[in-house]
Image 1 (cartoon, one colour):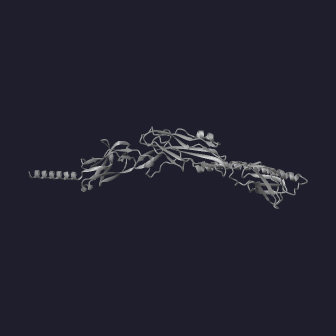
Image 2: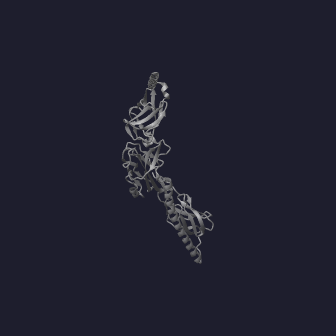
Image 3: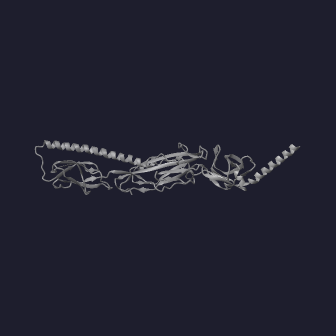
Length: 428
């Protein structure tokens, strides 16, 4: 009988202890609040408050619920009154976007002591807001405009070099022929003042070799002026009956061909009459045409990015649909000063985005289910050599029809425009 009384007293003490704990741990979950919208990948605080400070030492379990179903455990054995949470993550998985989520906070051992937050929504975060992970946003592996300018300029320089080598060969033949004629003559023509009989080329570019045939030049090197440019021929060889020189390469800054004449000055200062007119043409220079303030479609309601230093556009479907639109990346332009369109480079790439273990991963994929639906270069190549460019529009689509909708698909493209024109002039 004594043992029964002792057992009854113990049970009463236990019930009193449980009721005391229950009274101490009455609380509410204050964050998230009803109607809140939290974005996947962001860090938010789950917060709850107590009616008694003694309950701070209690251990709590945090669970993510969708409706009345437990999705997964967010954290176990949490003390205090708040817990930071990477939105969407739970033990063993990641939440999908939805509008009927709750957080349940419950006592670790006394599970009947629990409270739910207000109903809140989880959405997929646009790229501009969610990139807080160590990995960087995707960069399109595209044509390097500066490198392309160097390549195109090198191609033009090779053309110039080949032309000048051919001219040099012709000059050498002319010089050799004149030497043979001079040797065969019994009497050499003597001029009391310099005279120009012949200039090897009637059309020249800066850097081109030139041969002047005449007499009375003297055996000591004088000077050949280029009028009206206030320049001098770069002399290579000088004899009494012939001069070999080169038009200076640094003659730039003119758009239209110029009429020039050559005049020989002996070392004594005697001058010849001007040669017949020669036509001087400018060497070509390659530049990139900057794309500024493109008009980008916001068909998905997203904020498309334009990285001006890379001439790169980024579109996102925000993980919930297939989107398409038209971007106007360049407005009609008329080039001036004999500049023309020389080359167009268009690059396109695409990625998908997954959130795995708190890190945002950008995975390169093929473009068989999203990407640009119209490569503009096919039509733009018809503009090579012309001075007027129309609006350039990119017809694009992006979306993951073959993947779960909570994977975000990103379309990237880059367009580079290269122009050629007279060296040292402006195209506008």
